[in-house]
Image (cartoon, rainbow, N blue to C red; front, side, top):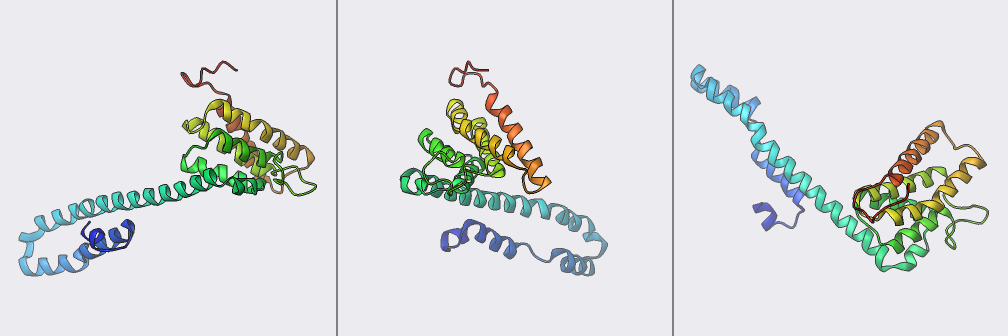
Length: 219
């Protein structure tokens, strides 16, 4: 914490520096030296130190590093949501893959989007937004569409978007997924498994009822 106050380094970096400065070569150097100097009388206190050294140093270190990672994720999330919220021209330029990746990133970061942004990104994935798909294509491929469905279902499950907006946004993506699967097989068997798993989980998550949320009445 002192290094953090006097240094411009990040929390994670100062945590590593502090750990490296305080965690010495106790076992390879300390044990032989203490045993040579004090003999068997030092055995019990010596190995008590060995037993408690790791918990005392490693637990705070893990807490510091996880806190640093959480701050970094929050900073990246704020930047992402800020760009999506304040720059409509950026969203308008998204193709199907860009939109699917943006939805997936928000779902992984557990941040919510407005209904308007969610709908616009979903439209880009499904290919219904102007310029979202190249000529001759109708939106995301099956992998991207299933990934976007997974993202919408995850955000719905986390409560970062409402159930009804999530279902409405998923409708066009489901059509795109069905069309892309009908047109031809995916590139690999691994992709097929991923598509089926993502789509099945998303369908179950989007269709389940949550008590007290938006007064859902649909099946």
